Length: 280
Image (cartoon, rainbow, N blue to C red; front, side):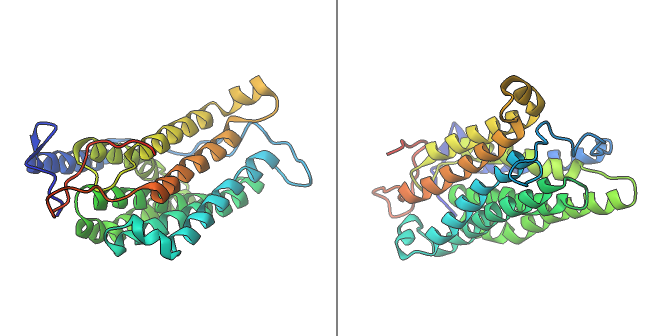
């Protein structure tokens, strides 16, 4: 377990771990009190439906290519011998491999979905996304709290993400689709990551890269929510297409962090971690 000092932010480590566990349990338990959330008839309708170069919904479809590029680039880089210097423990590479695999598969799945948006194609878009979300949670646990805890929770968290999509799909087939568990995975994961970053010291430099990636992810969600308004304003590109490109750029900054970071040194052989780092 990482020794980040008896206090960080004025709180004992045990208190911070307790807060993290309490927030997670309360958030998960609160789902039982949230009414069923259905997709609605407008879910598969996007602002830009233009067919170009023979591609249906062209820009929404082709804008997924950056996901594939970044995902394959990340996987390839992680398999290079030179990437070893970015990890203190070799097993820490595993969730990153799953993350970038998920990014590449998100591009493929979302490409397939946007060719003909429908419930039957949506799981191919959502499943790899959940692997990305859960992998990032495990990555931050490993690098801020404990490698062993991160790896121990990896498969259960992946299973939770996959189950959230499976639950929606099977309830949808039964005519009572319930999207709330997937929404929990999508929105609570970044909040949990932000909380861990705020409460626990990093083991590596490059925290600023994560902050940039998080900011780009938020921007991508804003583009998604204002899909039609952006398309009406520009007449050229929709918010959803911009969402794809911006989210892929967010993933690139995570790769960039790995390529530039190094373990934080200290006089104590036990890892001590700085609260923030600079891009360099």
